[in-house]
Length: 483
Image 1 (cartoon, rainbow, N blue to C red):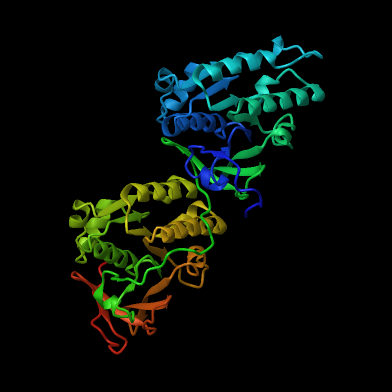
Image 2: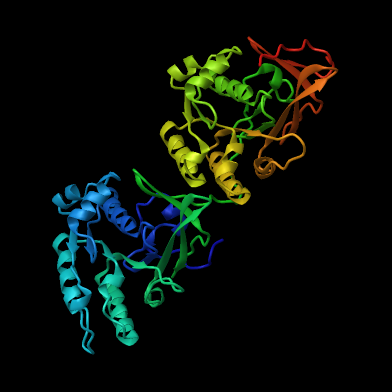
């Protein structure tokens, strides 16, 4: 969803991956932004990264005024995330000022004001020519004030002073019980309000972000997952659903010539998404490996995400059916990434996908199997993740190849439900017993924009690979089953 507003508002890039897509450019330039959320959401890190990226990427000095953590604590806490505050301070681009406030020392009087803070903050800004400012947190600043009128007046003064100073500011605040902040007032005087949330569902922790308001600008209004890892904060926006992706008329091979012949054009369109479904032991991984090898043969790079087998195990098993993946890995045209689905939540898996795609710039991405993701998310969550993934791959014209485990007996397959309508090509593989003989079958359910064979095809697996038989050959040699 988007809210209508003036798109010409000057903005300051946040430096946080994905956030500028949601805010359509960053934070309002020269205006204050309120960042609120419960403890552990990442508010302080948001502020630190905003300043650090501003210095390193946009040459904009910054001031961090902390009312809770000391300079040494902040420096130690963010070093593991690759942010060296000491180095930034040494270049005179960053200034950290710890203001110690004791609640017992704060007396509420009718003359209470922030004049001392303004003088201190003004000196810090002018000393380095700061363009960005972070105040962390506002609750500590107003800890001893209970008079709503005084509090409202001083908050307005603070936000107005920051505007007059012309700095782009982030002010953090703790979330209240029924309000965005404990005072319940700041959101009314902020130009931009961002809410951070940290929740645990089915023992999986998830952080989410939502833009509550943004004066003078359109913005995303959904909840967006964000992650904190060794590279800092990354926001995962739901990519545009306008279906404006570029399409290709180039035909590429599936890696198996006999399968290519089932398509009228001799293969599939480049940049298309293929879904391969079947129960356990139906050769899904073998067909996926054919696709990976075929791409590598064309000197195109491929990332293979395996949720069930280690790279070594996958290479060994494919060698037993005549698919040698070692040369492709050695040539760096094939990169295999293996992890257990339960290792992290859906958002973390999606972030790993994004980052590996950025690092390797592949022409093909294979996920084997996507059904494993159902163990770490609901149907809706898995579908949303796959929509974002497929949309991102299509935007980049990357070939997508997904396998999914289905179940016998009519049990609902949530991942197939989620992806089958999104995929351009859907192939079903099946094992069956006929007259006490074991038989494998393959059928193309759909192929958008390409005429294709609709009859069920039989195939066998041999030490030299898959042998596919056309519909007229009803009695191919039955393969030997090794249990």
